[in-house]
Length: 311
Image 1 (cartoon, rainbow, N blue to C red):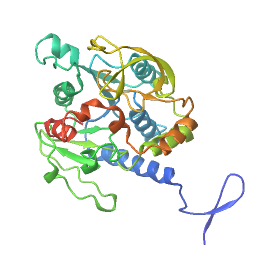
Image 2 (image 1 turned 135 degrees about the vertical axis):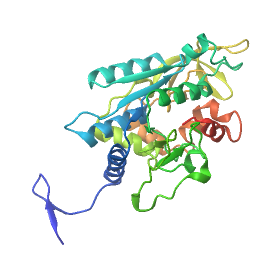
Image 3 (image 1 turned 45 degrees about the vertical axis):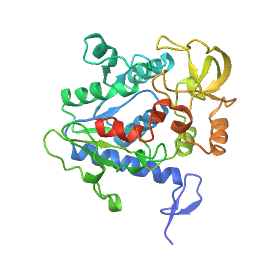
Image 4 (image 1 turned 60 degrees about the horizontal axis):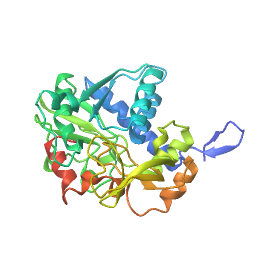
């Protein structure tokens, strides 16, 4: 058997990769394939853990050159301040270009209206599609993973969207042997998911291995929260707490981040990456299932939004 020398002088067989090496290699291949195939790709970057890992992979994929595309964030106006600070700091640190599509701007000029429940996550679709059209982006990288939610489990790595940004599962193409078909007509675009085959545990194990910096909101901290629909929500101008809902300080952390009105915290004492990995290993519910109220609006809430153009 052909052997390859390691830095220590020991020998190991060629091709023996860890599961994280395999996932990293696949994601890098997807990123390079999309950049080679599309003319104006862009990467969604919210400052959350999945987009942070995706950006880290993009920097690896194209080093020593700069990342060959810009970043896009749809800001609901109800994002966590810690996450926005991390987003801006990361963009500045790596000299990246960030475009922000603002839901508050659409509310101010009447293109959108506030929902009665105060959540703005479903309002992201129109600003997102407008930003894609304005930038003439034919490919959009997203951090969605198949383990998150049943509608996302149906996704292909290259997910075709029609001229209205809508997703039709019947038009998705087979992806055998890591062969991806980005063919699309004018006006259509493709959503590309480099982390499709990753799990939440994979993401955190990769964060630990690579030393990826994240917003502190992901680690256990004291926070003033209140209980609603079985979730610990952060008080804010978006509409909480209401009468009968009392806020108090608890030791919590966030498994996923998004609009404050629909993203819940979990009770946790995990203050380090290693403690979070141990906590997730014992969990039997996905982060979206545990902490995203917008996914509970109906049985097919995510799939309905995807058909309208949401990620």
